[in-house]
Length: 472
Image (cartoon, rainbow, N blue to C red; front, side):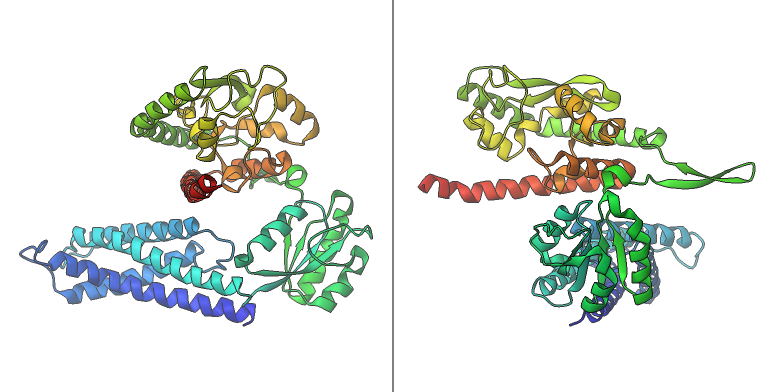
């Protein structure tokens, strides 16, 4: 099956499934409303709700299209799908409620519309999840994959190759890569040739898509490669070194008729800052109440396991480089950092038995909820670093200090993408800057949901491996 056939097939499957479910949801909601348990004396006839079903189906398909729900689903997470369904259904029902005020023949039951919202979110979300899982299973099996050619070994070439090779469900088959000069860089994919042969190699291998990851010294080739792709109808994507070349979000402005471009500052300001702070206060207060028994249990275990304080306090740099004390449950021996600061690793002998368990389940991070309530941290943001390492990194990593334009977070975009602990600082910066430049409240909620799923996944793996470690 060709990539184009696969794309068309799943486009129509999604469209038809969404249409049928959207229409039926109104009728199901009506049947629930007229059931003996919830029935009222004077309910409008079903024929009126059939008309509403057509309207809801049409509007829902339209808004799903507007929110990009029929674009290629490759690489899109299940969280994005659920958010898309939620946005579409919410806007659709709000519009129907507004229109119902002008339609006076009779009033639609508000309870039917409430049932519709719940059913729509559950049924549409479930159907899309099932279809996308089927599509990804086919892609993993090799059906409908797009042939990909990578040009250049700069930027995040290594990370890109790793992601694509480890996740076949993304739907790409890497033909190979073209390097800037004949140095025969070792990579887990075939080397096809040098940059000077790019046009010939494109014609030879006929890729469906090209990703350009050139190093800094060869950026003048970008326009030529884009032109080659345009003339052959090949999709072209640029993956520059985000640390040095990332272009900030911009808007067009003018001054007395002179056109200008305004670069968006790397700060969360005004109403956005207030909304983020409200979310932080609400969720951190709720978490402290709900998790109070767990706090007590961890406190007891720490005291029984080793001598020393319960909490580990460490100076970190937050927004605008302001120092603050960050709280964690102590997971290492009390004298662990008597000398030069250093990162800990999974097999670090300084980690206590209870500390190892807490780190596996991310429980040592819980006291940072207090930092969030205090306002020194946020639930979501770049991970805070110690002054010792900040001073070291700012000299060698471009744009490192720009991550201090927002509050540090307990979790972040880098962490939910697997960049935790002793991982590449340069790669983490790319994710941190992407988060800051593309911040939204929905983005924060998405990261929080992914964090919970990651913790649950880690906990499941830990529990499933526990019997094996006992047997050993």
